[in-house]
Length: 73
Image 1 (cartoon, rainbow, N blue to C red):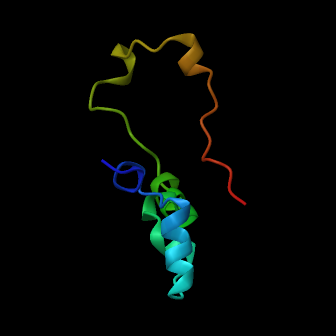
Image 2 (cartoon, rainbow, N blue to C red):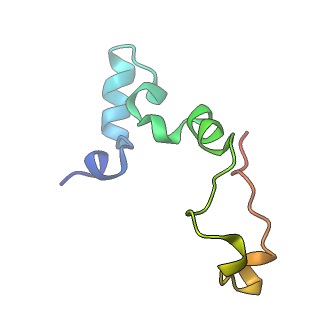
């Protein structure tokens, strides 16, 4: 299977072919790499499963971790 099928990122040959016919390289990648997709994924709170909070077993390393959205340019 080709890299483009697995990662949804075109190889340099596909990018060159796209440029030759006037396609932007960003139009050849999957939407999962778009900043807007990441922002949409992280815009709301992700709630845990429906188990009462007092029965959770959460390690301190997880409890104290700061989870932030990925940086973008």
